[in-house]
Image 1: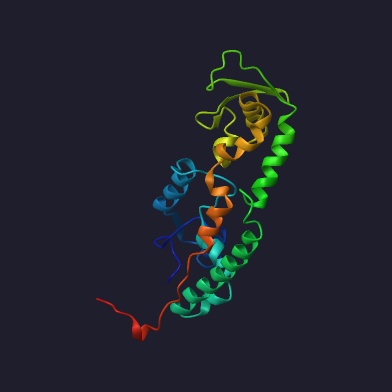
Image 2: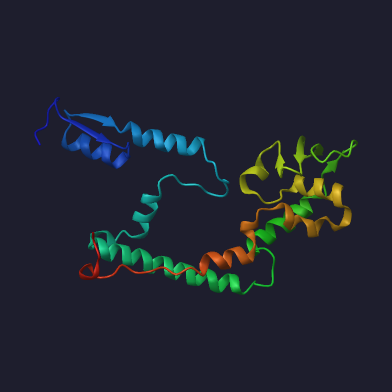
Length: 217
C-alpha cells in the first residue's frame, strides 16, 4: 500500500497497532472501530450476571499471552494446545478442591468468611424496628444499610462479590445471635461451594479431530 492522505486504517485502539501504523504510514489516517469500542464500553457498564473479582473484557489478549508460542501453529493444533492447557488447569484445580471436599466452601472463600466474621465484631448494628430490610450498620467512620432479604448493602461490596462482608456479618449477628456463623453460608452465593467447584472441573475437554475425519455439510 502506498502511504498518503487517502489511505485509512481502522483498528481497535491498541497502542502497538497505532504506533506501528504511524511509523510505516505517517501520512495515512487512523480510525477506530466504533462497534468494537461500543461493545467494550457497554460490556463494562451493563452486566446482567453477577460481577466479582477481576473482570477482563479482552479475553483474546489473555489467551494470546498464554499461547504466545503456539500462535504460529495450524488452527487445529492451536485449539488442541488450548484444550491441553485447560485440561492441565482443570486437573490441578480438581485435585486441589478434592482435598477440601468435606468443607462447605473452597478454602479462599472460607478464609474470607472467617476474616470478615472477625472484623464484623467491631461494627454496631441498630435495628430498632426489627425490619429485615433495614439493618443500619455503624463502624469504620461510615454507616451502611444492609438488606438481608435481598442479600444487598448500600455500599455495593456484597452485591459485587456475593460473599458476606464484615458489615453484613454484623447484621447477620444481630438477626441470628451466636449461631450466625453457621448461617453465613446461606447468604453467600452457592458458586463458592466445594460441590459447585467439583462439578465445574469434572467436565471433559475434547480435542479437535483430524481434518480428514471432519463431517462438514
